[in-house]
Image (cartoon, rainbow, N blue to C red; front, side, top):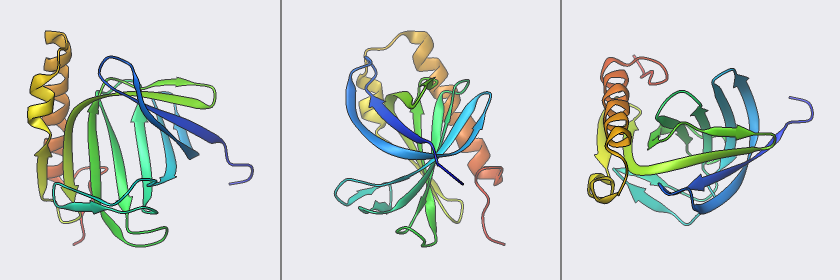
Length: 159
């Protein structure tokens, strides 16, 4: 891609306060999504059986019409797919050069063979959010679990 477009991702908490920000490079844009490539810039962390390491390549898809985002996690810059890290979040807000994602704590980790685990359920349960948002978040988790269980895009598994 010539002259790749840089996007600043603003990860927000459920109240809209910024938790952290990082840079990504635009890969694809549709009317309702944005996919970018980013490098994990934090210390190593094990979550739901997946270890995220500084320098891991993330291919991140954010949606303006879905209550989740999906990160395909690769080992290092050009290593194999480790799996997917899915954040339950309010639909993304996209502005020129910026993306804002309000995280709702609840995550689904899907390994590259199709197994999955829900993490941070207690944190989600403790959030003070509207009942409608809580229900949309639960529906989003169920949708992701269905996609993972059936091997539907983006969760395609070997053989």
